Image (tube, rainbow, N blue to C red):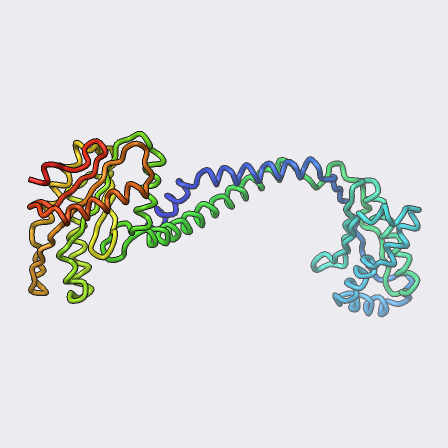
Length: 376
């Protein structure tokens, strides 16, 4: 199950994977283009008992000493030393500033008395010459302080034919793969972050008790609707549930939440899928009816009124609630601002309270500023 979730994340973030791979490829090609080629040369040396030893016992003792790893390691340290490096540069009659780009590394080959010296740098001939010169300087230094062992060339360094770095094809393939992996990680992490952020954002948009948009987000949606569709028809409405006023303080929070959800469900049943419902205040709900002109709005509000006029039975609290809805609405026209339209809606609700009609519904429309049928 988790694998399918990750696969869906990767599918949604495919462009990040492609972008990561292409970025890695481009960086690799640019680095290869601007990088200075590096060449490596290797020389090997062998350490043996000195030919100057007179007796077989001396040879046996020197071999036993040679078995100690510290002896061969000491020769490697001499080969890696700054002194030998400086003497080698002087012997080559080269400038230290020129040779600073060359790296030297001497190691003892496992289970042997063989040293391997590696020199890398931008010039293959200079790298090979430096490796051989360091070897000669180490041999001379060893001869001056030690007569028990001899150190000699096993393999002399030769100039490299091709650089070991950069290798565009290898580096491009590796960067392509690493870039794709990095893009995949970004896709997964981004999706995991997006879901909590969306939940967090939704939390601040919604009214926790009724489950519909809160008043601030409702106002934002209304302004956005007017801004995006200034020439389209639209009606907004404010539905006050008079019967809630006496229950706000007496009904337990769980019961009040259940009642508000029943009201929300009733509104959703009477509205279309693209209509918007919001919680206006403690006892009021607001709606946006996009693409609804003044001629069509009365039928919608009439259905809402009839549905909300049915008493709600809260049997677990032994109470039946008469909602007593009042509805005030306003039709958008003449490119009026969102705040002005809201003021017309609130004024219509006040008019519905004052009307005294059997159906307390009032609709403001600049073409016909009240719903005459509601006055009958």
